[in-house]
Image 1: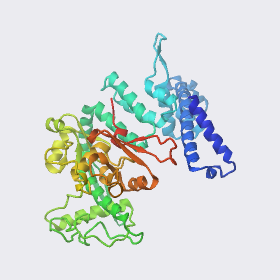
Image 2: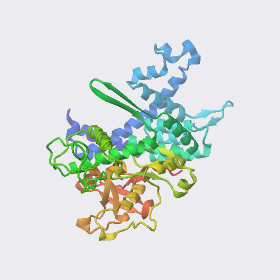
Image 3: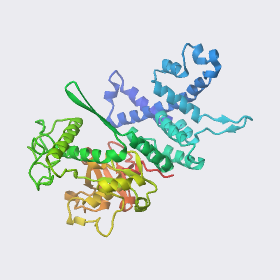
Image 4: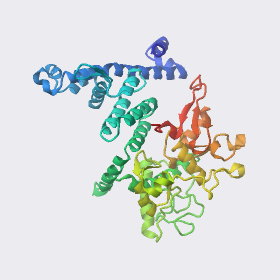
Length: 479
């Protein structure tokens, strides 16, 4: 703790030494990053110190006290309103402070015997300044929700693991981690939840203001082919944009105005480069937003369906379900779908398999060669599936697999790097350029889909060049 406080003091001293109203602008990039890190620790420690206070305010304002409630004596209808007024926090932030304070405070029995906090690992991580109140609240909420269905030993192990993995995760990575934890801890609850979601699926259409408004909600099994197809079409446009001049407005996702184009007559362009079935348009940068691209992709799919006997649902990717062969055959357990944080009951995959090109996680069979050496420049579909199983999408930022492509760690052109799994990593276009431009190094420990990917920052980002875990290992549950 003393070292952490010393680091905070040093960072704040550097900020003060810069002087003047433009102090942050006077900092070097490395100093600015360090000050940012220091303020992060400071904010977490302030919240950790205030959470017990918020919990005590709540205790002294409990409804049973009536007019003697602390909050009501101060002129507030609830402890949350009192905390809001004095801290400027939102309702949600105040509720989280109270929740974390209550769940991490030491307890006593009716006989006065001391007991540990309801969530001791969260309490330790919060008090150390490693875990934010927001992340702590999310972990507590998950574990409390599972308290009646999962035994205490498994919950304790999961809490310890989550508290080790959550620090430093972005909000979307934390959401993904918690979703996987819930699926692993409570597969029966996952099956019941899936049936509830499936019965609630709906697509509503309403015409108003001269436009058609679509409002949809889909269970994961129904959503998988929709999201996969649209993401594949949009991703192709985004990738083409990387090589196109910055002018023009684009001409749709491929094909002519009727959604038809050249090719083999079965929904695919002859050169394989249109998103649906048409020819490639002029090489100009497409300036549409991603939501506009998705709207146009849906239009082109439906336009093509109206005019073709064969609907071109086979985009450049498949719906990939991560599961074992035993789970697929038995229908027991849980499975995940590339591009989604949530999980599916394994039994639901059997229904998907009847309608979609489902690829279960059974890689490296006799019919596939996973290591091509330098005989092949691009990673094969089987190799990309194996990389997706290991990396979970973009190994750097966590973008879905459909947004990524295989990157040679030892570059093909520069280092004569082979097109093998151990020399490959999935990166989205933005992270691919960042790795090349900023000087990040990539290391793979181990072999096959069980290997771990590490990103080593350049010295100007981290003088110590501390490796950062990447890929699906960043959010994998160990308990």
